[in-house]
Length: 108
Image 1: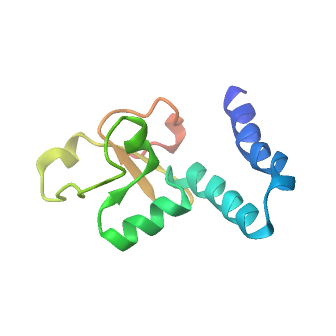
Image 2 (image 1 turned 90 degrees about the horizontal axis):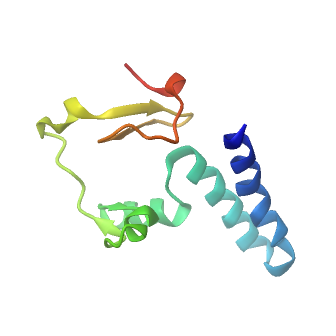
């Protein structure tokens, strides 16, 4: 139930600010909400990742790190220790289990 309330608040917050923004910024804000819920990255994160070839996400800056960081080597043996979850667009993997994901979305 708590996850549902968080999702509703994440969607409703940008809509509450609609009077303060133009249509273009409202559309970008709505698209960012959808992409954050699906991939964990905002639209700006995806654009910067594409432009730089690095892994850019706002979550890095929340941890006090730089926004964009070099992508990890896919050849490393660390892939065996990854915990992966399915979403609509792709599978997202983490080094540790994500406490915000459900077990039903976890891949074997």
